[in-house]
Amino acid sequence: MMDALTIYRLAHWLHIRRVPVLPNLLQVCIFLLFNSYIPYQTKIGKGTRVGHRGIAVVINKETIIGENVLIRAHVTIGKKEPEGKAPVIGNHVSIGDGAKILGDVQVGDYAQIGANAVVLTNLPANSIAVGVPARVIKECVNA
Image 1 (spheres, rainbow, N blue to C red):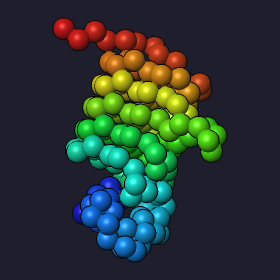
Image 2 (cartoon, rainbow, N blue to C red):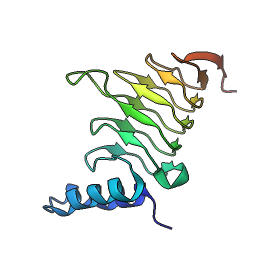
Image 3 (cartoon, rainbow, N blue to C red):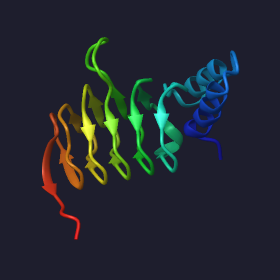
Image 4 (cartoon, rainbow, N blue to C red):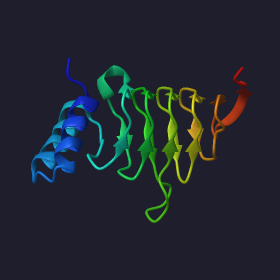
């Protein structure tokens, strides 16, 4: 079954190969089919997937997302100000439904972000963050 990230990956592949027009058309398809904005310029790692086929996901084009990240529905990842920096998401991160990750934020590997959390500060690796604004409630140590 087709999801928003599958279309994004095709658009990104075409963009890297400098194919004109088609990446833009595919980006419009993502918006029309899934009510999502996932720009083809965004860097998204292998194995990353979206829950609920990517419904209502908004990602800033300057965001960098690692490998094997799970992005659930209604997630926003972007800048706080137009001139600001976009978030960098590590590998194996889980982002809950409705979460917002905003600004010059780094999310460490294996972090978990709860549903509807608003992340405005860096999250360490192996942590669990919840709330508005998000706060770390647990840090796990790798054995």
